[in-house]
Image (cartoon, rainbow, N blue to C red; front, side):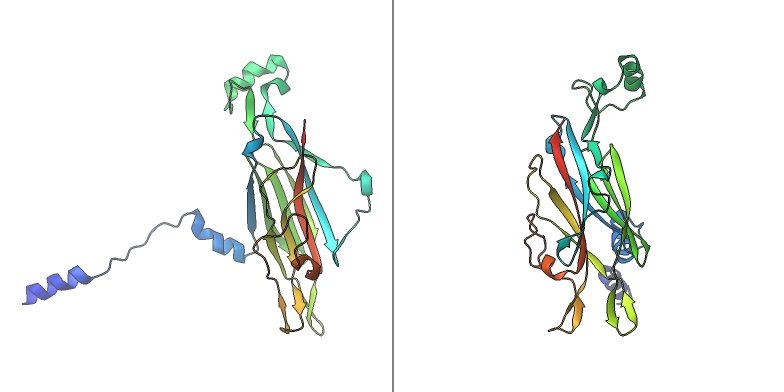
Length: 225
């Protein structure tokens, strides 16, 4: 009887063991600490060379904030790929030898198949954004945030993110990808909130944009090289 009881106990026991965490286990911790990443597939561009302008627009009270430098502000362009023909002929064999080459037959040295937009906290009043074309280059910029008054004499910086609906690349047009915006006060609910659609409309017509007092839109414009 004792032997039977022991066998029954072992048969019903549930196994528990420690495992090594993988990268996905860190994502909730990074998000809670203020880190966030969005990625967008641009591999459909790979058959030709394009200029990709990375663009940041700021809005306050629903109105675009004009850049004080205006047209004098340098614009930030990256290509979607680097070709072997972009380099002087005398260096090409050395570049091939050093490798790796994405597609030697087509003469493609490096290819950016995705755009990454990542955010990191700098201080209560600042965030840093990095917009990257994979394997090509990146734009890094600090972003000034605006506080919300949560009670007399107390202010907090409360911001969150929404991606935009994207399905195709229209050449020469501004394509919004991600919005970083502040919470707004909902008088009916008597609380600050940041909720709405899962994705925002690319024409900026989403109702939430009329409620958010301060936000940034991160996007791109693609033109044929």
